[in-house]
Image 1 (cartoon, helix red, strand yellow):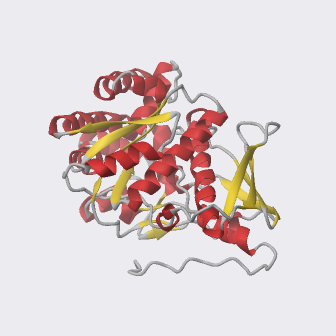
Image 2 (spheres, helix red, strand yellow):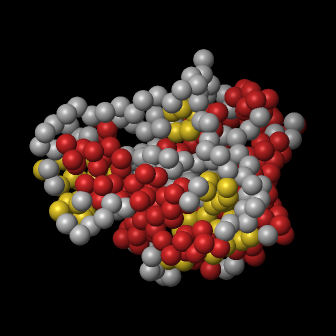
Length: 371
């Protein structure tokens, strides 16, 4: 049975010497991660020093190519901690340990008092930031909102917009094409079957099905089909199984928004440091959008499949998968420009809309703290 009330945020056990750093991590844990996997844990070294122990999911998640999406999520986490620390008048010195492998990066957060540091207004957006998968208003973004979003990503990154009815249609067709590849790839099915929590409005470590943005009838159909890959294949072959979910989850939402965007790095972010910098820019953009009353939904599968294509790297037992990914890459370059292939680090749709009524939560801080 679904609850109609948001569960209270669990509080960590009190500790006088580390209470402030715990409060910072309590907010930082709300950073986004792929399918709410939260691939990290924390340790507290002292009242002014915390450590992030991260890992990527490249070995078992087809969407985590070279661990880069996980590394971008790590950057989102770092930026969230930096923002949260300002609420306590603390400046954060971020240090990436060079002796840790890229598959298991370690980041030190050293906090220091700064009497001149002001509380970042984005602190209030940290817990409110979420994914809204339902339709948005098609009202164009205000010029002032766009300017603030463009400025917030800082040097080294820029925002490329795709607005207007014709552009939204082009983006929607790209999402529709990419979604088919997502739905006929068994490696993607394994991910989806593990990360969706059925009959749930909230989930601490997965994606609740009520947040997927589809009708009740479609949700029932998906729940039945996704019990096995054999069922999914049957629906795909004989009952147009990819068409209906793609219409509701990809095509129609991509049409119903103010526009789409791609966040570009001035130089290809092909190092761990570059991915973390990109993640910090992503989170700054997302928190700013939330602060401005905007909703956002990531649209990352075109970037991911295009990356497999440009690297000419097979990623599925389906022999046509790489060829279809090349088609996605061609379409992506045509819609968003060729720079999206080499410099794109994040994509999404954006617009004015109410907050979602169902969403992913986070693991308790006690679960994320290393023993």
